Length: 519
Ligand code: NAD
Image (cartoon, rainbow, N blue to C red):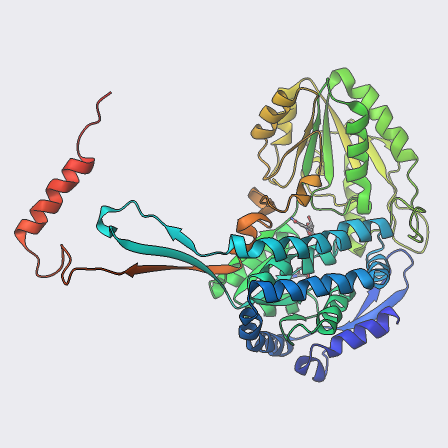
């Protein structure tokens, strides 16, 4: 089945909303070839409302399946995705221009792993908690905290990881018992439609997982109807999402942009550090929120590090992704992004940076930017301050670790970060001083696979986290229940107010909290 047919088949699964006349169709393009690979509806507010209504109707039945029932359905969906892996990877490659390796590991592997992870852990993270309260006033009373689904969760996603950062964020929401409406990026909507096809194929209740296709207005309309929004995308749009959600006091979780630093100290394993820098600056053409976007290298190893990186980057194969093993760096997915990348490189060069490899758009019908290494960079340049989101690695020489930490923290972002040193204690000390929400010692990015641990950004990189207990509780509202089994007919402090009772409480307060502690 072609991607176009797939888009049309899957769109039908959106039921009532899809039966209405679509406003417009959005063309989906293969960025590596410029070819059209399908069309999706640009849904308006009424269509979005209809999809959310269906999701709302489906939610009680989905929740009633219980953790085991939902986990079983999601395991079936995982099997379906693996059985249909060729289609999934093909669509990811076609609509994203990424390599099949990135499609398999960065998208499909992650969500398959995640389906199992949340299937196994959701019931533990969301189990009722018996709270032992400290208050003497509550002696003998039972206090329980429970986490219940909010209802319908909207997940708005970006184009760089159409499966991981869209459906991936739906998995814990679904396991918590919510229904979910995905609003994939208009640039890469076909993957989400394929997942919806899978959800139907494995018999998930109609409406438990649906897709609202469209551009920014569709996302904005979704915010107006759902009970919670998880958004992944740019900081600029994240602000708009939060402002819109504030109208109805809808809770939001925001995973936004980054400008992740890597620090390489004199005693680092340089070969590993150089491999990590090249891999995580160039993978998916640098279109990763936690890509290595700037490197600070101690002067003692700077020359060796730079020459090793240049050698590795020069050998990268770029082109239209085909069979696995043929291309390292694919296309730039989003048309305006290649201009941002070029602008950053031009700005750096104008201010004195040297281009050691790459430095320009590549020829051809598709959208490619050559893997690029810059030196002679500093913090007056956009490439060191703003998110580039392209295959560009700027490397800066620093005097010592202190200067590296200061520069690494000189940012308005705070997503991921890394430090390379053989002195693990020193590495950990430096990691603790980095302002980012995540820091690796002798590693980069792979911390994302530790789904037990929270992953989220500080400052302009976001609000809230994915993964870990908070990564599923954010899709719930908590309810505290207090049960009093044996209570007196009248509790102390009840009406009528009496002078003597007030005196007793006053004495008690002084006794408990009014005395100076000795020593
Ligand atoms: P974007 O902000 O342009 O768009 C993201 C999504 O928001 C799209 O689906 C878009 O249609 C929708 N949208 C646009 N305007 C909207 C509005 N007013 N209301 C609601 N929705 C709206 O981002 P992008 O260009 O698709 O993605 C790239 C960005 O995503 C980068 O900044 C990258 O760092 C970030 N990102 C962050 C993470 C993370 O985990 N922190 C992961 C992946 C990508």
